[in-house]
Amino acid sequence: MSKPVQTPANYVPQFAVSFANADGTAATVNTAAPLPVTFPVTTTAPLTGSTSASVLLGPFTPVVGRSVILTLSGTWSGSVQLLRSIDGGVNKLPLTMGGAPWALFTVDCCEAVWDESETTAQLYLQVTLSAGTLNYRMAQ
Picture 1 (tube, rainbow, N blue to C red):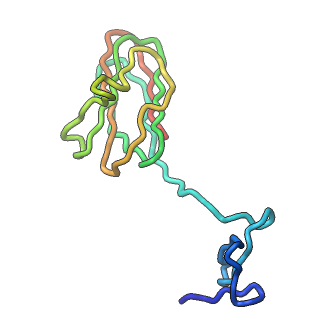
Picture 2 (picture 1 turned 180 degrees about the vertical axis):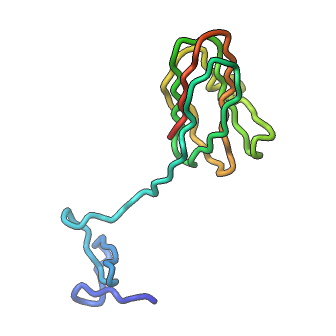
Picture 3 (picture 1 turned 90 degrees about the vertical axis):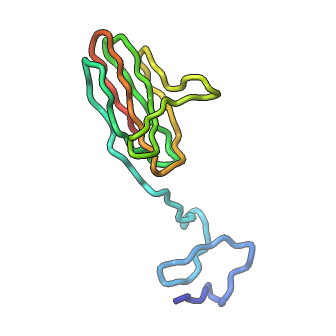
């Protein structure tokens, strides 16, 4: 049910920025009553751990519209490639940009590697080690 705006009249001038109080009356935006803007807090569990063997890690389900941060560290040699799937992991494709490999690492890193736009997408790490132990963390 819609409630009328009352501040003290039954209208708000068009130039006033306001929002509805809990009782449906208008509250004018000011420093004491800022515009009530909240962003949804959506999280996904990080993919984290360490490995001394070549392995496929995942899936990691990214939140749409948020950057994925990848951290790789340790004493290791080899490569780590970020893969993406939109079919539940049946097909996992390496990320590319302009046709060139993207998110392919041979040294430690801590950086944003991907911004997802599809809700069905999942990310994986293809780890190919020749020596050492890799610590990894993919999170948002």
